[in-house]
Image (spheres, one colour):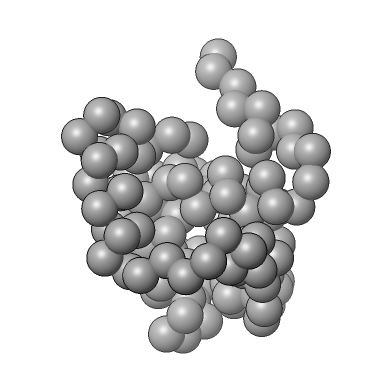
Length: 119
């Protein structure tokens, strides 16, 4: 069994946030939730993976404080946590302005090295 210490044993909330954001599927889920609240089932319908796999991604996002899951009857409603990325954003701003194109270049380089899907 592979254990990701950054996600499973976090040292601080910033570690959790960046570990959660390190996965393409979790970033896509955040983008979905930016538009509207969704049930776990609605999120899962978007992906070619099991409901259990999507639930695990949502748990990682919840532990990182990026998503809130509210139980309504038999379903869980997933909501983007307001101001969830504030600490990560402030940390990145301390290094100066990062144009989106620069971050896209970094992601492309990580993809080329096979490092962008760390989970």
